[in-house]
Structures are given as C-alpha cells and as structure tokens.
Image 1 (cartoon, rainbow, N blue to C red):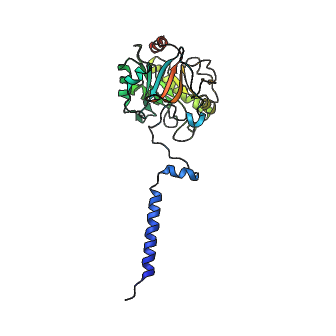
Image 2: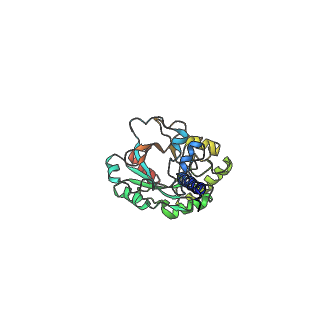
Image 3: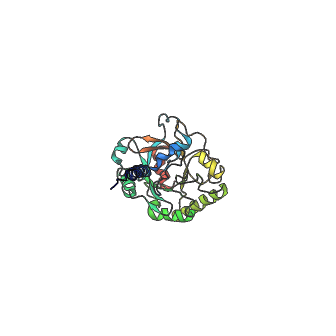
Amino acid sequence: MPVHRPRLVRIRALGAAGAVLLALLALPRTAAVADGAAPTVPPRGSARMGMGVLAHDGRAGLPTARSARTEGVDVSSHQGDVAWAALWDGGVRWAYAKATEGTYYTNPYHPQQYNGSYDVGMVRGAYHFATPDTASGAAQADYFVDRGGAWSADGRTLPGVLDIEWNPYGDACYGKSAGAMVSWIRDFLDRYRARTGRDAVLYTATSWWKQCTGDYAGFAAGTPLWIARYASTVGELPAGWSTYTMWQYTSTGPTVGDHDRFNGTLDRVRAFAAGD
C-alpha cells in the first residue's frame, strides 16, 4: 500500500502554522502597540487620581521645601492596604481615598484606607472618579455620597472631591462638548452641595480643563481647587482661580506614590475640614 507522505507533510505544516497562530493570539493586547494598534483599555473601576497626568503633561521636577504647606496623599485600590503609620511617621497629615467611580464601582479597599488614615490621626476625605459618559452628574454625586463620600463637621473629615480628568477608557473629554461638560460638572457639584451642605473640591489639570471645558471660569468662586501638576511649581491654574487649595505634585512619592500638598498649615487643613 502506498504511503501518502505529501499529505502527512501538509498536516504537520498546518499543525505548526496553527500553533504559531494560537501563540500570536495568546499574546497580550499591549504587544500590538508597537505595530501602531491602540493600547489595551484598562478595566472599568481601575481609574485613579492623576492617571493621565504623566502621559499628557509629563514631569518637570519636584517642589522645594514645604514651607507653610502640609503633606498629604491620595490612594485607591491601586495601592491596596496602606501602611498609614509609616506615612504618618514620614510627615503626612491628610489623605483622600477613592470611594467610587461612575455609578458602577466602589473601591473595596476604601474602609481600610479611609478609616486607617483617620485612626493614625490624619484628616481624611473621599474622592469620586467621574465618568461623564456613563451617567448624569447628579446620579454620580448621589452614588458617591451614599458610598463613602459624605461629609461631617467633625474637623477630621474633608469635603468630597470630584476627580475630573482624562478619560482612561476612551475619548479624553468623554465625548462631550465644552458646554456639555460644564453642565455635567455643575450637575454633580449642585447635587453634592444639596446632599452634604458643602462644596465639593474639584481635582483637575489645567491642560485638561482647557481642552474639555474651554477653560470655563464659572466654578472658581465657590469651588476649592485641587490642581494636578508634577513639577516644581503649580504653574498656570484653570481660568477663574487665583490660588489652589491642594496640589498633587508627584506620583512617585514614598510608600503610596501619589503625594500632595495642602496650601496652608495643619491648622488650616483642620479648619477646611470643619467648614470654616
């Protein structure tokens, strides 16, 4: 009986080609970036304060001596359980922990982060990562307040923060025009004030603010500003603000990475928490 060797060779060749194809399919999606494809989109819920700052604004040094500014940190599930005692020993006196994102995510580490910072003596608060393309500002403010973002006048609880910055999941401005973005932010801020009696802090970067709100100046009169800039100075502020309340100045600080400075002494941090 004749042996059909050519067919056997073809089967082996197909088997080898299939193995190569399977291996290629198994590569991480980020491997395609070198060929010009888009990078992998992170999973919903993984966004954190300052996530887009380095990519869009870069880094330009570190600030000089603290002078009258008070050291703080911001954390999320990215840091997991935080060594609060170590941070306290390093001079950190206030902290913000991510509580929520959109209307679909609650930080599972929030209790350890929010309560742990309080337990070592820090003044602490919570922040919400905004996703204006998924739900209204009012709906997200309600979700935030109901899941860790509320405020109390105990002198140890800072007002909640609206983290509004580059969209890590898609279009930088969440598919909104400048006017629509301003309306969404106003919707959130108004609902937060109605629910808590406090004005929320607004965290953003000047370059994003210009790009996505048209450098709108109308929130400055009543909204404390937390500016993001990894440099030796805060630089230009968004329109309307002549000063800042907090400054995120690095993502590579001790223990948790994200470090911040309050524009005032610890007494002023406590007064701000109390609503004075």
